[in-house]
Each structure stands twice: as structure tokens, then as C-alpha cells.
Length: 282
Image (cartoon, rainbow, N blue to C red; front, side, top):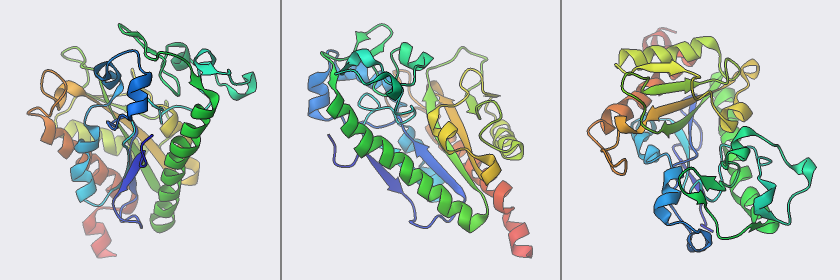
């Protein structure tokens, strides 16, 4: 397994109240993972949010702190509860009390993805319970602990903190929203912060919707606690908006989407601490 399953970008002490997470863009496929797969790496790559880690560069340059997975989603999905396990793919199966059945697990996309539509089973055999435990303890828990600590530091400094969880989605039919913002149907972020992100997205000309079809996953469910002034918002952007037609490399819209992410970060920052002019007047 990789020595650095995720990395942090940005200052140790947050200079903005906005923290970014990119849990699904990892492309560091360990040889053992490739050997365990019954499908080629190109199939495992379909699980990725392709190049979203590179989309955040403008937001990071503006001061946002980011946590980015380098280990691929095929190894462990950081946007799943650690109990969302398909017991049939673990040897020996975990006890029932250690499982959290969900539609995602039943669909083959649990903590360790089991299968993909059109490709079938992804692995030659079952994963050992010890290997699963190792991935949880060395990747999943440290990733979320690091985010939690950064949010706590930001809240302490600014009075509130916002996590923007960055994802991409398969191309959508023409006329559908290019950007989906998810807040677990009102549970993970204050309404005025959500509205700041929505308004910025519309101003930049991106059709946007909220919660349909993506309301957000484990990352924002775990970290979003509006009553404690820790907010979380999931962002999904259509891959065809920033990648070329094969959906592998940057396309002509790449920088526009990078600017969008930076603008949303700026809008969330202003909604928490006030615009620069207001700060200067204090």
C-alpha cells in the first residue's frame, strides 16, 4: 500500500475558514491492488473523480487548505462509513454488529467497491479482514481525523468553518445541471452559506441544482454540524464540463471550472468572515 494515502495542501494553520476535501481523485494504484483485480486498471479508473485534485489549484492558491486522497477509491472509499461493508467480499466476514447495510453497499459501492455495472466483480477473491482493518486504520480514520482537526482549527480562528467536499459526476443530458450542491437535504450547512455557493455558481453561468440526484455522502454527513458552526457542502461537477471527450485529460473548460471552485471558496469565506471591505472597515 502507498506510504502516503492522502496529502495536505496549504498552511498548517488555516488562513481561510474553508477546508477542501477530495476523496475520490487518487491515482496511485499499488502493485498489490492491481494484482488482486480481475479487471484492468482502466476499469478501476472508472471509480475516480478524474483530475478533481487538479481542479482545486486556484482555491488552494487563494489560501484554502485541502486534503487530497492519493490512494484510489478502488482500495478504500473515503466517502463511506467504515461499516458500509459487503460481508461477502471479506474473509472471514465481519460480525453483523460491525456492518451498516446501505443501498450503496448493496449496489457494490461500499467501503471497498465490489463491482461495477458493465464490468461485474472487480476482485479475484475476497479481501482478508486483517487487510480491511489495515486500510481503515491507516487511511480512512487518519483522513477524517485530519479534516476534523483542520475544521476545529478554522472554527477556533474564524468562529465557523466550512468543508467543501469536491467530486465529479458522469456526463449528464444536455440541459441538466452541470453542478450539483448537496447538503443532505438541509442537514449539513446553514442556509445562507448554501445560498452563497448557489448564487456564485449561477453568476458564473453554470446551471446548478441542489441535492438531486446527489445529496452528499459520508464526508459531509460526518463533518457537517451547523449547530456547532462547522458546516459541510458536497460539490459535484459534470466531467464533460472540464475534461476532453474521452474524459481522461483536461478539456477546454478546465480552467473555468477551477475558477468556479475558487469563486465558491471565496463566497463561503465572505459569508463567514465578511467581504474584504467590511473587514477593512472594522
